[in-house]
Image 1 (cartoon, rainbow, N blue to C red):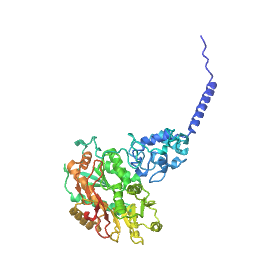
Image 2: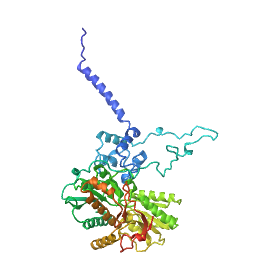
Image 3: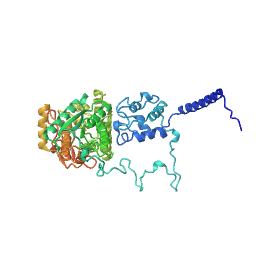
Image 4: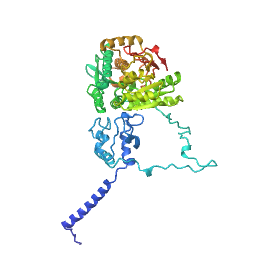
Length: 539
């Protein structure tokens, strides 16, 4: 029988230390290799981020479907500081140091995944290696015509049809979008003596007057439709302040939904707020009625959002037809803010110009809140425009309209709906124009105008009129469906042609308002805010 020889303690210790040193060396070597973007980082972004940050949704102006887009950042600037993970906004939001916590409305990323992203950033945030890109090579000759290069061949889809990049080869059927989930049963009804309708409005900063007008209009809608709901409940408002950074606005939306138990939420003309509300509404099951014009809010197959305003595409088409076709104007300057709504509107107006076969306008991009007005006016006048199109917010539009109508050039000014949300009427008749929906109830419009003036001391803004209609629509759905979010959603989706004070409402299956629109003159200062339907050339 063989003897078992035990190694002495010093020998075992020496072997253990040698083994650990080897493992540490391997770990150190592995830690020195940066995480690979294509195989380790991009899959995380695709799985956790694209629901909000694709080319379609673009929440916060941020797209994360490619390395270049991630590095470019969004409305809040760069998300990544290469080599400095702790200084990177992406890391701060993933760790909850800056609100809202990302991924928005979902479980936080595991610490190991956040550590991986931080390691990638600290290593320089490099993209895919250049060697992984397939070189552009000519296709082998197939006949006497010689080699055919990839750039010579138009891209095609299945069936051999040429792919026009300006037109998708497939899109969502707007009539096929429906909510088939739970929530309609009586045990999902909202309890309590009051049923609240949420309202997100800017209550601080440069848009404060706009928010106050929205709140007053919403209260007038409640007063005009006073009375108890089925079950004896009373309707009331739950008001949230959208001013400030995303985190504050998202917290306000969550508070309205969870603490105030709002049956639905009405949002302002701000496209970023509409996307925040849309994402929360879709995850929790709360209908959203938005005054925003961003067309992407209704392009991603979500059944919980309804857009009251004409979208950017329809506005741009109406402006382009009026400017290029009806008036024959060719010298056009487009002023666009560098935010989510400004970029979206500028893209649509450029597309509309191309569709009409005319040159794209001279474009001037502005940083929100940082505008050298004399320099901007000098730039505009140097281009001798016959028309100026404004895709900005309303405070900037007020300044520009007032200055442009007094300038030597005196161009026709076309103002997007968001810019026309507040009172920016000029003192020159026929100087500035916007779009308006036809189908307004003229009697209700006159009554609303009178009541608003009596309490505010000024005429209602276009956004105030739209807020009145949005709250009225939710109230009408509440009376039919009762205090149940899913049933209110169903009732909004079934809304027949509705004649409001801001124009007609006719939702399609995706929540788009298809009421006809036309170009109308902005009211003069001191006149009523909403032009009557007879003033417009409808499109």
